Image (cartoon, rainbow over the protein chains, first blue to last red):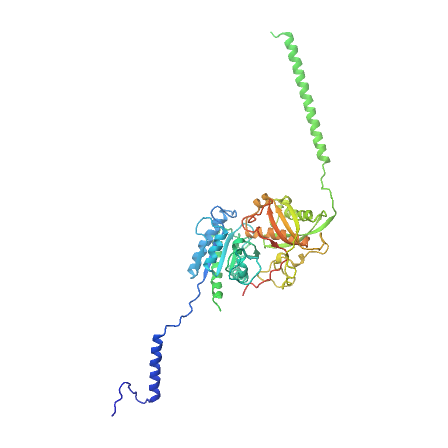
Length: 236
Length: 250
């Protein structure tokens, strides 16, 4: 009986099987030599937290502490919550230091962030006040003007404000929405909103700014909103 | 023993002292009466130098971050700048009232001057806004229109009334509002509070002086970065440019 060297012939197989095996071997070898096709990594999602005021600028006078202390505490709390949700956070200040508005916008713009939150507090009004830049929307340009850099992001900022609004209301916090002119926010090249926290004056859920439960509800709602914003931002 | 002439001298001096005391008392009473008479004759009402007219004020409300129109009847002079100052002064008086919905101390003296200048570089060929807009191009809600998250609560009906205050429509104007340093120093610090003050001033100016399309602010004649730490005072506020409304969700 003739013996065929090199390739063992399986019982019940013929030439087509042989060709298929050879083709498979060739393709495997080719695959081993060509570099792997790079798979696009999940784009990073960065949130910039801007605790307003600080250092020589105390901000508004609250009942128990200056605005700068309140915003810093809220920034620290939010950073922890966002980190716990796998969101990278960059803050404009970590202590009671002077950081001018230009530097805050620089930090935000260098971070190439997907969300920039400017945190404020006030005794006036009730609940949370969400503000988006009043600049008219514009097409993005390669070199945007510094004081109107936000105009290319106004549409996305409005969308993000809507998500934060929903999350805060879901958390039982009354929200007012508006447009404003703020140099720091107007210079940010990222979806940006200013969040001002005021005492909760609603009869059912009355709470002062220093109420830990109220602070926690606000921070949780904002963190949940950022998670939802992240989901939307990664959708095609 | 006291000498006789000394006793007489003492008596004369005592009598003179008593007499002078009586005269002084009478003089004091006369002066008091004159003061009371002067108060009675002081004017208790400001003289009306101009006929009363209706003015529309956009009054801010901190509770819901809104501007509500309110019509007031005021005696207003003919000069547009003086009218603008009086109207804004009335607005500030409302804010200084004890039960104000947007409490800001200062009152009518907070507005030092209002200058009206011709605005030459406005783009009159800009397309009409696709949405209804209120003052400063901020979205406003039409009657019966469902509310959207980013809609402002500014009523659309605050468009300038025909014939109100300044019916001359020869060209757009640029208003410069000079605030006092005391007003800025005592203004409550806060994003909402400061924004409402600025917007209510701009909206009130445009509602009563339709030609005013741009507004800038000074404090004691000098530019100032912010009103009280938040609202930008370095930019020119547009009273008529439309900002297209965007949905709150993508």
